[in-house]
Length: 497
Image (cartoon, rainbow, N blue to C red; front, top):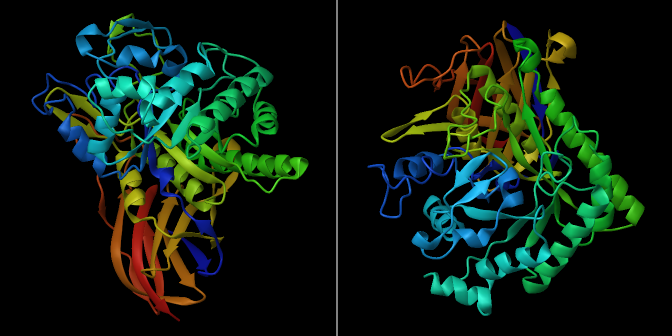
């Protein structure tokens, strides 16, 4: 058993957390849409083909935004193929995932699905094989009251504009795998042109330019610097993508993945400040971490030119869930930098939910995401932590405890999300406020203490499940036991000390 202490003060925080960090991502890829969120043949679908069991389970994640329709898919996509009468929509080859796209689910179907889920759409435009003109037309279709494309939307049965506020300008354009891949200078031209034209049509929107596709890219940060320097005045966010991987099958090393996530966010924070100072600008640009997850087992992206092929259907275990909790811990801790984040993805494809025609399976990663989305609110507290270390393979000695904390000044509730990264030694974490006392525990749930490789399956759907955490208030402080390895989520009422 190891012990850690955390000292807090409600005056020491980095600002309000943006609930959009709990967003999701839905791409035309594999069975994410067809056979995932949309399956007219399923007895669990409504009259529009939306899987109601999937909607119900996704509602538990309380995703405020969902990014759509890609991803790599968007760089070959003509959004006009997915509107109008379904019987007239063309089938197309999707070059990104070597699949056949039926176009039975398009912009209007997505907007209906998003409304049913209770989330806001975050639309991506094609800046790979298409340019600003098509992006403007899609914006007009979604947001305008008058004009050709507004009339087209009305003709298709949707009288009111969708009022989409967030727009992604392409996807991973520094990646050689991307259709329309280009240089940082060329992408800056494309995205600045699209952003400025789109904001002339609707000044209320915000735009997200593509950052580098990840820290392993040769273009990492230099691409981002070029794009920021050229698009600082027209863009609002820049994207970051990162997928954690344990191909080396080294659990202690993998459980310290939060170190790398923190490093990426720190890289962008420093870059933002450097560019802002260089430009002598008062404006701030923030990070949209709009693709994140664990992904390394199911990497094959060739759909064999089938409709809705089984692609990237990762099976998640306990250690994956603990890494996902560390992603969200990092986003909460850096609320001053990260304003948007999208779990990639949400159904079947590297997702917390798997489906077949008659039911669904909840994967391990669902649990920390749901607990954190439900309980995090208010400001992100700075934590002064004294934690023992453990040996994390090539990463060396790493703090065993990873934590984020929030405080809601309206309710005086505090929330804590604690990961014990040490796979061998349980921990007791003692939390103390300088200015408050803990009074009542409202939520105390966790998972862990099992083989890190244990995973839910259709045969054993509850192999990884949550349990009550035996947290205690002692002399106004909070003591939390955390399994090895494990996760604990708490929401606790406080009063003035």
